[in-house]
Image (tube, rainbow, N blue to C red; front, side, top):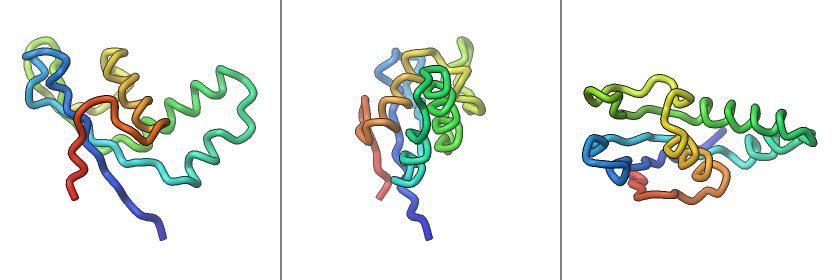
Length: 103
């Protein structure tokens, strides 16, 4: 049995265009974190593992595409600062911006 904890990163701090935008991520389990860190002596392997973890933990979101607010389908297409906020959150267990735990 696994337990699910979804947390939402609010993206309004990235500008007025991003008001109402968010990314919901499932917090990784201890097992997923252990698996990710196992046998990764190579930086390239480590980066690839982090990318896979972000994709795996992505639940949903809305973002600004330059014209309008749209559903986020691929987190790797996000601006780097927002993608990094997702990575920081997943690796630290702490959000880098406002969080709604939706309890």
